[in-house]
Amino acid sequence: MTSPGSGDEIGRFLTLADAAEILAVDVATVDDLIRSGELPAIRVGSTGPWRIERVQLEVWIEMQYEDARRHSAWQQGDFSNVTELAGARQARLRPVD
Image 1 (tube, rainbow, N blue to C red):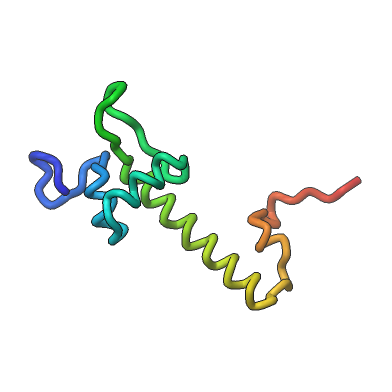
Image 2: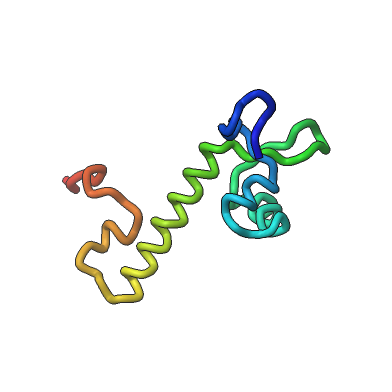
């Protein structure tokens, strides 16, 4: 999972196997996430291997946590902040004229 010459650091781009290891899933699951468009990835060349940018994987993981939190709050009937559950940020809302 390391790139040449990087010591123990993970390089900028991960292979599907690297991402699968981080997510504790199999490579086929990561491939499915990429092909469905849920997990951003690039192809090296027109038919080459998929690569996932490490930062994009971290963002995707954070989004999964947020989705799970919202889903849990919805299931618990916690509607005290519908704006938050909708994914909007209150600071971005503008008053209606």
